Length: 531
Image (cartoon, rainbow, N blue to C red; front, side, top):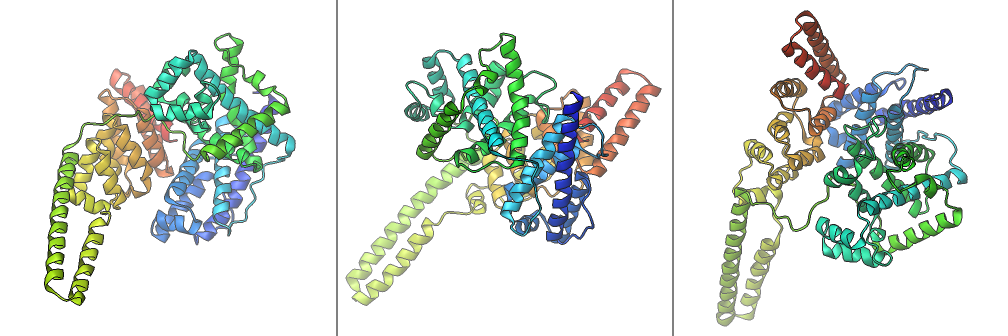
């Protein structure tokens, strides 16, 4: 990193911190927390947690900020990531690319919050966003989209085989729709950006065709692995692309964030091109003239008007079609219950219709009319959709946390989702078995409802059990890292883990053997995740 680049990154980072400090004062005031001035991200996170306790939960915090559950979760996660990357900062010290990206991402979260809550008036301007920079941003997004398409076509050079592969990954109907939207026999041209990105970051597709391109140890290191980082960056780029298609100017913060994303994603591909490992040339795509740029975005707007906005997040994996999992006992009970209730419903309706007919035959018109109303009422009640809790009861699953925990242990996402939708809280300790056997589906589901994790001070037990599991030969998987980062990056836990790491290091120095060295590496690995 040259001196001029290092100085520029430090200036941009300090500007981000200044914005965050100013915004934190206004946000906390809205949450009835009065502070004289804003401080570092860790302090802001602690103050938000205090506001949560004072107001009675995250739901009340979200209401005051005009955010929904998912938006507040994303806001707090980005703040946690920032305070993890920047536990403390002294003016003038060196700043890494990841620290700048984490800070810029959180400033974009502050921009979104200000749009949602008009009472907030802080400024998030990072610099100029003139026409030239807007055009540069449009070129970068276009280049990244064409680069992804080029990499996929390089992995599948035969269009027929590519289309058959897409039918296997998605389904024939979707591929036919893409072929209609794209040019002749070009399914990729009909895809939305999120679908193209998913083809790149899907676990199997990435490991099979693209991981070698993005193996640079200095790039895409913001998250626990390059593929996860790439997925996160591309999802943010999807939102920026939506603004360009809507012909809305990008903010200076979004332009800065896109500059950093472009460097992280395009640089390894450019290096591979220079070394002859790929035919995709990002620099060549960036050098196209303005007429070509205008044609690209005009075509993108035409396709967008036909297909609708790209509102879908860039997911972690492709949901394969026609994959029906083996029914659990609860699902079989549910199916039987539905059939029985259907039979009962038919019988009840038959009896009601017979009773109505008999009354019509034997009563006056007035009496007959009075009989029809109960029939309609009963029919309307039978058409009501059961609540999540009622659905559990019909499945034979009682409202009990042990049943919820059992569903987590066996990776039963249907039952777990019904418990979560019905409002049951969960505990971090319940995830230990699922993490040990890598039940990703139910663990991803719990992360979407992370605000319902209400276990008090869960991390001591969680980290202790994780350490013993690693000592027994289990690995610190990406899922375990995600859960550590989501719930155990609070200052007290980080400081306690630092002491555990130091003690393990002293024991390894005093009694050097395989056991003490192994325990030192375990404690250090956990600390590196949450610090």
